[in-house]
Image 1 (cartoon, one colour):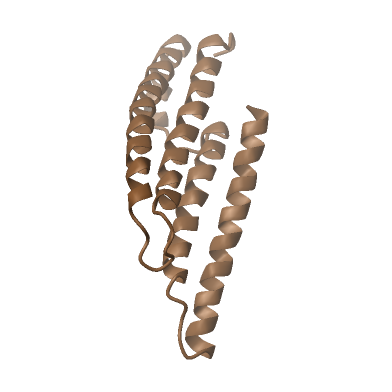
Image 2 (cartoon, helix red, strand yellow):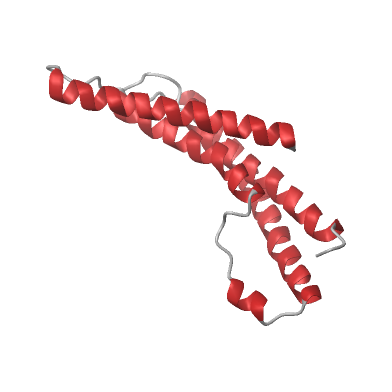
Length: 152
């Protein structure tokens, strides 16, 4: 999991940097050149999708997602563990199903080309698949920690 977490952080760094560079180029060309490259908006959107896809794993790993603490305040420790395990088990099931359909969606991208970048849309659609798989893997990790951590 540590290697996957490091890979995800590198993915965030690369995709976020690429998005910043693309947007900077777009801004620069709007104000200082005669025309803006047509591909910059599409590329920035694709890099944003990849930034989110890689960043979601770190969010799950660090416990950065929103959680309703109000319910936990009124439950006993064992009930909290059952609730958390149930929620994360449902997330795992949902992400498993979503990963499958993201894969199916990705396949459609090989037959479609982006209008401005003129690359297969599978490149962009792969970001959704990566997002779902990252959420699945990191959610399984959280679920295992909840179920097998004796302190919780």
